[in-house]
Image (tube, rainbow, N blue to C red; front, side, top):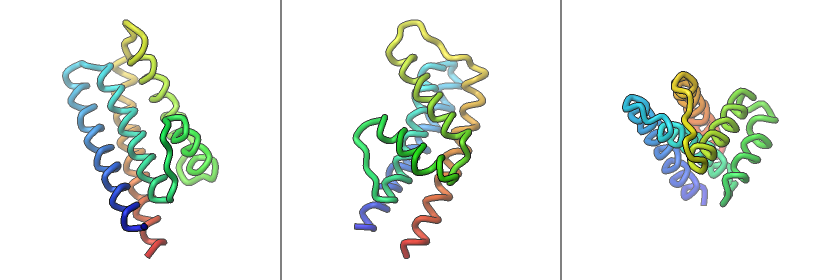
Length: 135
């Protein structure tokens, strides 16, 4: 069972990295709405990977968000600023995807690219720690 969780967690973290790379390309092309979408999904996939490694599975975005705050931010495993970032990414993705003519601020998006990369690195380190405890 643990091996299966590790395989799935690696899959989602790889997908998170690919989403971040796509976000960078979309930013360079000035497709800020698509960039914002990919930034959210990079964070979503990475958080899902850590939760999955812990044996926690969620079918809804709201479940992943709640678990992030409850299981990672509140106990101090990741800094609160990344919980705030996740919330902003989710809100922006929902607005951009579902409301016409909403365009994100390129300066905000540029900063978010850096912060999402930091978040992915933190979560990848947490995954290594979790794997080490399970062995």
